[in-house]
Length: 274
Ligand code: C5P
Image (cartoon, rainbow, N blue to C red; front, side, top):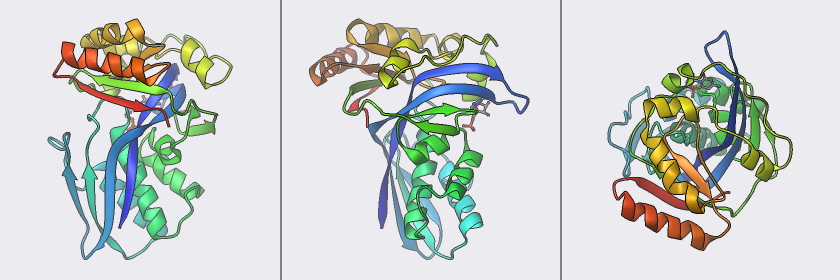
């Protein structure tokens, strides 16, 4: 049996540069990962199966269209193999929320199957499968702080900000990624700033924040609640989850308590950057 964590992905900065003819957008983004996420357990079995548990299991299909099973099918198509697996996904991250849950789950599936089959985790074929599954899947497969170019799949690892206290907050609304991208105004606001991860995060932007706000105005409330005591508060991906970075654990936990009291229905996760 192999267990893999599928950590939440953050876009510490996300600059949209242009619309592409293939319907995607040319990005420059700083990916980072936190310590916590979904959990995937994969064990040998007589037939393939997927069981989804956990607080965000409801409403998720466990059928062949699930990205985890699509990842498995793509792996078998590329690497062969006759083994079959019973897969359990503990869904702890809110879905369609900008922190890459589905992409992280697919990447965790690829890592688990690679371990079973002795495929190297840096095998380029594994990364091309990942890129076909989704723009964020290669970043989730690598799982390290990296600058992403192209659709997000061209990765350049950079030194991260390990142990930085982070609070994730989701106001309980799902946001459609294509719908947010479609509302981007087409204005190129410039490249990622130069410098280390800290500088890029502090001086960067999320160009999807404004279009996401038009679909989910509640994101403004999340940011207003996070901003007072954070070193940085910003939306991740296409939203609606926002993250805040803190100088110390105490400041993060004070903010977590304050927000849980003010908005008891919202999802929060107090964690650290990996
Ligand atoms: O690749 P993935 O399926 O995760 O992307 C979901 C949607 O997000 C795409 O269909 C596209 O509308 C949008 N997208 C984009 N440009 C990117 C990444 C995603 O337009 N670089």
